[in-house]
Image (cartoon, rainbow, N blue to C red; front, side):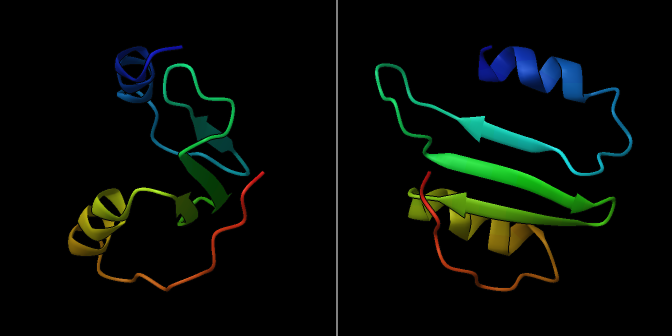
Length: 71
């Protein structure tokens, strides 16, 4: 599904527990971003895009660095 469609669906979601979302760029077979809901208050984010990670760090108060685990 497109990112736009995912944003529309997510607009009505208040809580995600144990969810895993992978983002793929068109024509690529490996995800450029993975967001994993650990529980309803913590998320692991892996990305090959440093600009995206910088924006996440700026937006959220409690950010802890973890290593990229490509799938």
